[in-house]
Length: 244
Ligand SMILES: Nc1ncnc2c1ncn2[C@@H]1O[C@H](COP(=O)(O)OP(=O)(O)OP(=O)(O)O)[C@@H](O)[C@H]1O
Image (cartoon, rainbow, N blue to C red; front, side, top):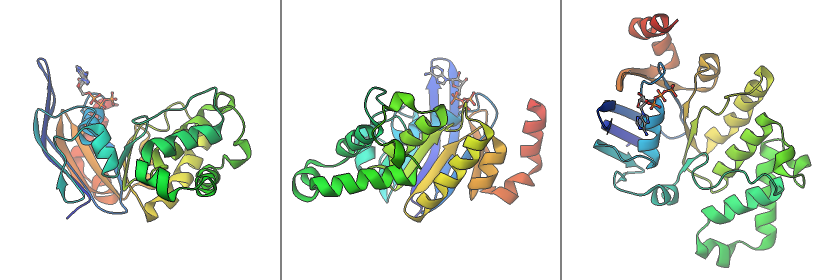
């Protein structure tokens, strides 16, 4: 069984059909890119997976369980994390406190009371900050970070509860080329314990970090496969040429 399987997903907003039988399958330790022209339904599909939108039809399974009717909080508890879902950066707090809050929000009461001593929490916060090259800024206010660093802090917060699947919607928006390159480097190590679904307009970035891609066009899957398969796909080339 794949880690995530969304099948025949439909989503209607009033008279507009945003998704019409879309699908997404993601395996363990897989980085999966969701691409397609503007308005093709990428963010809506991501939200249907995370529970931020309820699909009009279809089924979402995660870790061998039908989660279609679960709330975002229940999905988070099952091991799914959407950046911004549970908490976002509080600018006046330090980086350290932002991570600590995210960690506490994502830990069960049992974990907090019985197994997480202060020392363990501290080590975990510092490890997350180090992983995202922010340890030396631990006691600065989050507001003092560059845009790219704030994005990295948000990703670190989304990962604090050790999810099985991380969902990122355009994480490199507004970043410099160098920040994009570093973002790719920072994401790679999480593959050892977590899968990723990422929506991105930067196709070079997507091609560099993803194993597989799903291409949406007008709310449907145009193609799904390895990066090489998608790059060679005539229909995909055509929709990108059509857009240019
Ligand atoms: N909450 C909403 N209410 C009404 N229409 C919506 C809503 N959310 C999305 N849509 C519409 O659904 C369609 C798909 O939108 P979506 O944001 O999922 O596409 P996208 O592929 O992520 O686009 P982009 O690349 O521009 O971010 C669009 O026509 C959009 O206007």
